[in-house]
Length: 155
Image 1 (cartoon, rainbow, N blue to C red):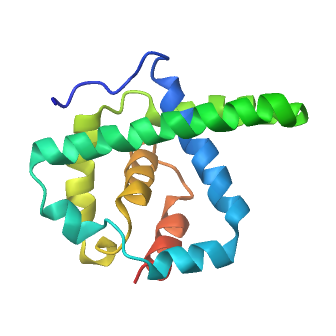
Image 2 (image 1 turned 30 degrees about the horizontal axis):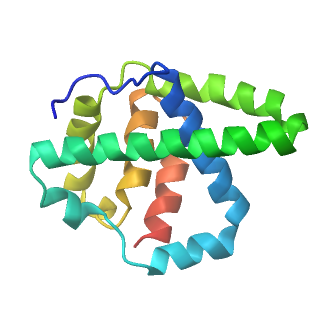
């Protein structure tokens, strides 16, 4: 696969919606779930640096596919069971979509290469690394605190 745009049949906004839904699910899991995740084997910096450019691109595209699947499942559940959340979710999805605008899989791969070149980031899972590099691209002012939390969680 090349490193072209990752926008799927729903356009570039689907990814951000899915990412936000994944992040909301992670928040719902709570601190205990995150602590457990920190102790389980994960795909992080060492894994990333051992991949070819094509494998890295495929991995990023796979993450996007996972986000899309998660968005679809959560969207159906929220629509059928929790209609009161629909407006809130739509707002979050619109706001978060802006982070992935103009971010192709190739740009994310290049950014992750730089991210994992920093030793302090080597244990941060790739899925979180994607979120970091996209937020960095948007000059998110809360990124330093978020990155520090990740570094503490994945020392």
